[in-house]
Length: 137
Image (tube, rainbow, N blue to C red; front, top):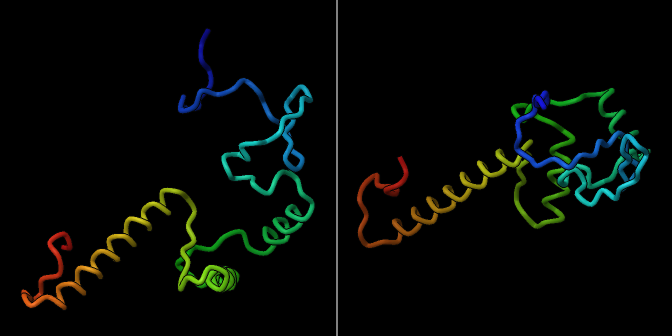
């Protein structure tokens, strides 16, 4: 048997073809009903085909689909304010993927470590001029 599927074999796929969803339920090509306990690996946590969600997405799509973080995004700024108020944090970071989130986490950890190292050097009786930290270039 020839494999005609052009998808990379990164998952051991279960042989079921979902064609639609309603709330937390998925339906396959045979009409069988399944509880979506995986939520599209957390992508569809709000469920499928909720009328309020569909309306909100349609309205947004009719207005503006996407703008880069390189520009001011008023609704994003409004959401950031609400998240800061709710979390007690000073700032938030919006990203599009786990890879972007991991990159930010690594950079923030490095910045935090560097800032701590700078404070330690400032308090140290030994201060080398212009020395930040050995790992910072």
